[in-house]
Every structure is written in structure tokens, then in C-alpha cells.
Image 1: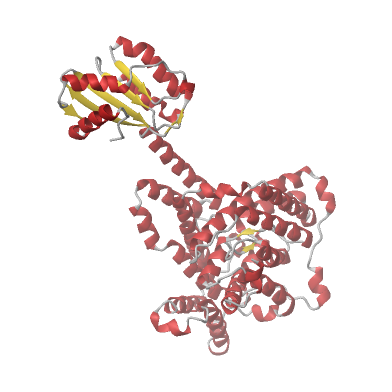
Image 2: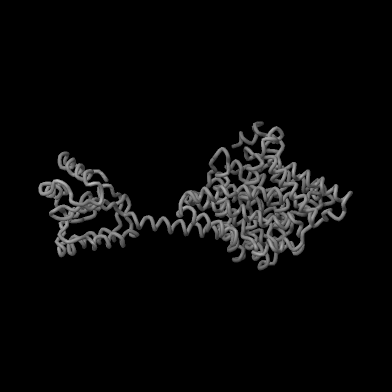
Length: 560
């Protein structure tokens, strides 16, 4: 990974991608700090640390870390109850230490158990949320801005769209539409020759120039400061460094601080694992991010952020997906974005404050569309109900609630379908009717759990009287104790009452089931009295051939 950072390969693409992510991350860092009732500079500090520190330590090639709106509610409540931001910083440090410990405990593998349908739903839900949340900036809505969330890592207010359209600023709409048009044109063959220039950079420059043109030629369309990027402007080096806050170490003696730190660690770790999994899916080269290394990097980042007066940090899918779409190739793009945040916050905030938020909104809306385009829904529909239902539920949950709750709903539905499928296929059932009676074979699955108890019990109870039954466990690796108990009791009691001749094949000695007549003896008796089955649940010729082969070779028949 270090060789990747210092290599000259893809240097131009990574720098330009870092520039685009920086332009997107800057207003988000400020907005999240404002929504959390923290100092605005705390959001910038978190963005700088997320880019430089975590970017350097992370094993991810394309993930971008920074302050996330998913933690806004937790941070807001904690700062309000602790009544001191410097005390709250102790919680950020504690969260970082816990994340490092989780990484060393190798708990990051939990992300591998998230189904693809849930991950796809999470991405599509985030895409829709990005579009919805960027509408206020795209149409120039500024009234009661604090009530409008600024990131797509959590849910959205139901009235966001209607609220945003109550006030439309024509100049912002023009800039957003021009930006979207440029982004679309940049995907066509006509603009392929100049596609080395990132479309996002062109959109930002175009938006800034258009607003400058409005100011000079059409003042009624010009955007005021509420529609532009807002970055604090220190007048000296001393003013800049005074914006950093040191933690009040007395906070480590507060139980509330420790409780908050634990909550932040858990939520931030889950969001990070989900985001790096999603980012790896977006990576055109399909590279893999070591989850445990990522948790360690995030933990160290949060420790540093806490000591420097920054907000808690996670891997953020909005910035990460924008990084991918901007053409980033290596982790340098994340580091560049952090360096740019540091340099620009210290040196040229006035220049950055000329950028219209509508231009950034156009970039994010286009990014959101690429995550939730109709082709994604069509693909999941073709996967069947077991894929489509969890996918749609995750989308709806992420959009209407928040990322973690949406993923939780999708996981619950996926587990439901897994359990439902497990219950329905505990064995392969084959029944053939001969003139002398029925021959029934139950071939148990590789894993038979307690979930299969009801269906196996019901099947045994419905076995016809005077039949010959073979229960084959030769391919089974695990049988739950409850299922074994049902088979044992049926063999001892119900089978004798119903005059069923039962043979148990392939059961291990550790199960302590009674010895029975070998399967070949039962089959031999049937073949001596019957040339072919009168009626069979499967192909009777195939069944007969299997039975004859079994007798001739003195081996068990293969699965039909």
C-alpha cells in the first residue's frame, strides 16, 4: 500500500478525483458540524484526519472517510447533555480505542455475512436519499436550512421535497441543470476525447463562472452567500490554530462520556464495514478491503480527531462513491482530499466560498442516480422474490429511516427467506407404489437443524400403514438432537403401531439409533415380488435401475 501512495502511476487521476471529493466533502463537513451543534471547524478537522490519517492507514483503495450524518443525532444529544464540546471529545477518543481493539479481535468479518441483495438495496437507498437531500441546494432553497439534513448516511425528512420546492431560486436551478447536462454529456462518445478532465471539476468551474456572470449581467439571478460554500476565514495563522480544540480530560471520569464512546464505536464500526463493502462493489477493479485493518485505521483516526477537536469519523459512501465516479485509482485521492481541506481551510477560504452549492448538488444528484438507476431494480427483479423483497425493503428503510435501520430490515427479511427455505428442504422424498405395498425413501439433507423438526415430524406421521420406509442419512453431516429424538420415537412406537417396516441407513454410531434391517434386504424383497413399480413419485425406470445396481454392487444408491 505504501508503494501505491508514492507511485507516479495514476497520479493525475487521483489528484483530480481528490479535488472533486474535497469540493463535495467541504460543505458536508461544515453542515454536519452545524447539525451536531459543534464548532464548524470540528467538521473540517474530522475531514482532514479522515483523508490524511485514515487514508494513509486504510487498506481501502477508494473509500473516503470523514464526519457522517449517521452519527449526528448521537453527537447532538451527547454535546447537549455534557454541556461542553471539550468533554465530548473524550468520547471520540474512547470510541477510537474501542475500534482499534475490535480490529485486533478480528471482528470485521461480520461484513462478509451481509447478503448481496441487502448491499445492493443499501446502495440504491443511499442513491435515492442523496437525490432527495440535494434538491434544496439544487433549487436554491435556504429557508430553515438547519432542518434539512446534509448527507445521505441517515434517513431523510418526509417533507424534504415539498419544503425544498416552496422557494425556488432560478439562478440555482440554471446552475444545477447546466451541471447535470455537462455530467450527462461527459458520458457520451462525443466528449470521450476530453474525458480526462473530470466532469465534476468542469461542473464546479462552470457553476462559479455562471454565478459571476449573473452578478454582473443579471443580478436578479445571482446567488447570495446562503447559496454558496461557507468556510471560516481566519485572519492570521494564530486565528487558524486557535480553531483547534483540545479535549477536557476530566471527561474520562464521566459515565456518560464512556457510554457515548461505546455507542459511537459500535455505530461507526457498523457503518464503516457496510460502506467499505459497498465501495468494493463499486470498484471497477473489484479490489478487496481488509475489514480488520480498516477498523484499526478508523480507530486511530478517531483518536487523533478527538485530540485535535474533531467530530467522530466513519467511512462515508457518499464521498466514496463520488471518488469512484471521479475516476480515482488509488488511496492517494482520499489523502489528497484531506490535504486540500487542510491547505484551503488555512489559506484560500475566500476563493472556495465563491462555489455555488447548486453545482455541488448537481454532482451528488448524478452520483445518486448512478447508484439507484432502473437497471439495478430490473436486475434484482430477475433474481426472484427472495432477492427482490429484501432489496426493496432495504431501499425503503434506508430512504425513510436511516442506513442502519434499513440494512437491519433487509437482513431480517433475508434471514426469513433463508429459514423458510431451510424448513422446506430438509430431505428428498421418493415414493414408489408396488403391488405388495409402498416403498418410501427419505434422503436427509447435509444439514438438518431444529428448524426442520416440524416438517419431518409431519412427514413421518403421514407415512402410510404397511409400507417399507428407508431413512438415508449417508450424506448428512449434522442432525439436530430434536430431529433424532423424533426419528427414534417414531421407530420404537408409531412405526410398529402402523406396521411400517423402517430401515435407517448411514446414521453415525454416536446417534445411538437402533440397528435395523439393511436397506439392500428391503430392496431385495421388493424386487423379488415386483418387476416394476405400479406408481412412482419419480421416474420408475431410473428408480428400478438404481435399486438393481445397488443389489449387484452391494452399495447404496445415488440420489435421484
